[in-house]
Length: 486
Image (cartoon, rainbow, N blue to C red; front, side, top):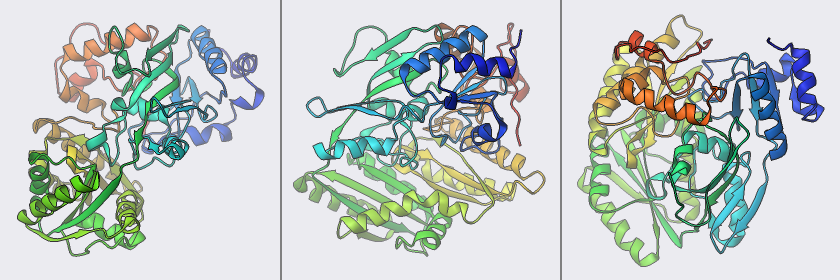
């Protein structure tokens, strides 16, 4: 029988402090959505545990009462991964925010899941070390959320995504089992469950602790800004740099619309008349850098760059990057709403895909801005719309769906670092066939037999895929919870 709210409150107060159990609407409203604000739902209860023991007790109680659990870090997810369940518990990890250990000998940091991404590098700085993955939201996003979405960032081209920088995890299952995966060593026996947890969107277990890899601060870096009068030339320049064996620490592209918005917002000094710019960062030892920087400059010029500018000092380099990281809020200044997509494609198709995206913009009558991780083909088209105008949200979603299907046709994927959440369930039907989806559900069942962790996310039912027109329904429909949209 469904427990009453007063009964739930009483039971949770038995295992958590009074101020860690939120049940009033005004307390729950801040958790109604994550960065994908088009979908909103207030949870039945929100919990703020401060220790691993409190997390274990809360999860055990949820298991007993069969309450769905949605784990939440900072809520910066852009795919609805932290959207609450209306009948469930929102498990907020904001109070588990301690850096437990910095081990300079092994170059690792052991942290709780609520530690901010940037706080890891701040704690490691006195040792000349840092944590490489740097999403645009790194000042706010947490390592637990980064693990859930397998986040990347500006420097993921050379230093990898979250999965490449996590060495160990302590994970709690809904059955109360604690899994200790990986370690400070580089290899461990058995199945690679550590990699499986990265990008699992909180559907397999609750992260209690993470050990991340730290890197030495680069000896030096050079930052180039290249301007182009044609987006196709910029795309071709990206492919040329990588194909010549140069692996930049970061290689980012911004189109004309984004350049204009960013200049208006924070004036980083970008060429306003350019159709596109590339920001290329190279790092390493001085001797190596000099040769790589000159070769990169030559390649950019060979691909019709109208200007190539080398940052003269560290301050100027920081200004160039600050402009890139400010691109999303800059575009937010120009529109009531925007819809940020996240698909990946092979680098060789960059120019072609960008041209098709601009054509789709004309088809749907909605402006689109492109700012993305060009080096690894991770696109982030921002579709500008006004949710107050009838039908514009639906039009933006259809526009986004066509972009993701375009990515798949080009040999890419529907997500690079934002996850699937509730946003890309239909596009999962395009990316994967029915047998693959059944395998995903089998893995989910192996870790979370009762389906309590983040239900209704990431994996579509076969019935939903059939309705979307992507596959035939097979016998045995898989569970799915319909989600409200506002």
